[in-house]
Image (tube, rainbow, N blue to C red; front, side, top):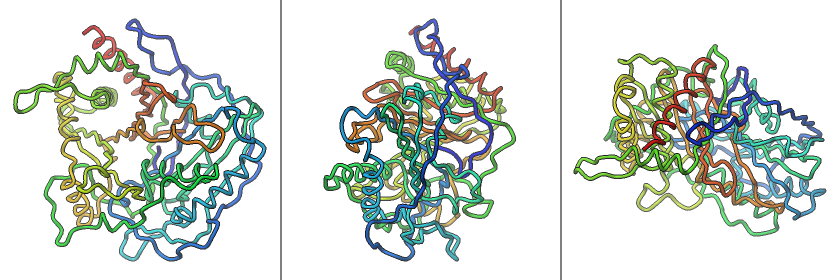
Length: 469
């Protein structure tokens, strides 16, 4: 995931040896991996049939996170399907999928009220056919984030002046000499979140195999409209006032980013959880989830690495799927941003000086606070304040991909063996599965070089310390 426009230099990383506790060290050795990719054709794929034309309204939750997701799915082409016709099949089935998911084929527009909407033009999405004379093994372990290499496999939108000029979806299909295939998807987060994207990919894959869609979109976003009258029942520190024109790009900063990935194996997570029991208000204790301990550990280490002053407030915002929080849940196939953001916040001094269990409790409490009432209050808050998710200053966002259904995708040549981000920004931290069937969780992020060196040492120190319990 990245900001609306990603700039800067990138460094690539691969595995190092394990540390003394048997955990994997950060994947921070400069990779020698080289990859040659040639774009041989680019077209626009419109819906296969005429669809709705006009303005398609977006919800308040869609307006608040103008970021771009860049993701790659790698397939070994497991002896099924005709590779010679794979690109044609994917292009034709994509056109069929866009009949149902027609907003993807439109363009963002800014209304007179200052809110973004989709102008459903039906002009289609950019579709790139690419080839590589390398074998797919040249990619190595793509969970060890390597933007310099992986961004060759997506059709990114660097140079677009604002979010409005970023296509809502782009696809690149790269065919490798060995028969392996990589699908690179770039998604404008203003239109959908990760769950909605996986619904679209599932429909597309079904059509590619000649099957009826297993998922169809629920397109009516009025289910998340503001209440009348507006009612803000909670503080919403996850948002900041919009102090620049809507759709504008974020300041990319002056320091180039270093990207690294950190692999948490199940035994390390078990030890972290054992060392981090939560005491509830009623005196009972509970074991935190793996995601909670990872979130707390990364939040502490990042705060220390950036040298945030002890009296400054630091915030960890977590993308929470709001669909099941409603009663009844949001309709199946809800097409849009169904996520809300929890806000864990405290002073940097509290976070870094108190026991690890303190950070766990703050993260746990913030996640537990995201209820239907909280989300409704957030929608009303955005309506009143015209706010965006706070990714400025000492705030950062963590998002979990490990439960998204990308690994169930089958276009007719097998399921992906790895799914990973092509890049991440300095304000976003991603937690994803290492590979298909793996219980390892990989944390990927970008930081300035000096801060990343400190962050890496802190993570390793904590893993070694907690492994002694």
